[in-house]
Length: 321
Ligand code: AMP
Ligand code: MG
Image (tube, rainbow, N blue to C red; front, side, top):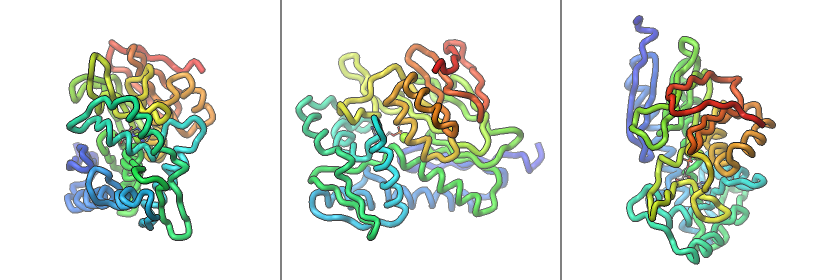
């Protein structure tokens, strides 16, 4: 293999996730700068530590507005817009419920129903008040909390892509714990594995070939706990306060921007296969791959990528909508 086709992989653990960067040149210094960039955004956006710009907003809930940096403001504005879409399962104000369930963290438990009902009253996205003039955010009730966990990795993946472009990199890949963004098209495309739910780390249902696309997967198998034979996973239904309960094991979104993939996986979770495919007919720029509990793989359409099924336990079907 000539040097120009050799892939160099760099890894780190950031945002509680394994991060992988692939480049076609050996450039440790560039990899370090990329990881530093990711860490800077994590420091602004995290809600898993006492301090960040988002935590400053949360700490001031019910008291006063907090001015934040332009990227944080823009991301919150985008997350609020996604939360206000009709029938949206995405809710940036879901924080109090996420914190209470602690799914994926030590101490997870099923909260009493009355507590869920009480916390639901603290999750109205319209009570996240934005002020464009000073780029400030105000949560109108004490106890409200913004959680950008469903959108931050997608946003950061796009910033890494932009940074690599600026550095003159034509081909590369960044994987932020299952949130993949790609640059260019090496030898016809990047091959991205579609994870087999509830299986061993490397097990794949299939592989996608993409170029200049983001591939984001959200799966119930990523973070969950079991109680009395019931599986409680980390994607909550903002309407009920409980994990979304439907036929899906995972949703993958193929799109240009990873932020769209990150938002749309949640939207598709909320809609399920049938409504999801119908909604995507209006969005040829967004494509989905649904993996169901009954081991069906449903492609919303297949124009901008190639999919190869690798696991014979699964059946491949196109959208019937
Ligand atoms: P993702 O892996 O992108 O699907 O994001 C999952 C994370 O988003 C969870 O761990 C929570 O922090 C947060 N989250 C859970 N449910 C929702 C929801 N309905 N809307 C927005 N964020 C959510
Ligand atoms: Mg997401």
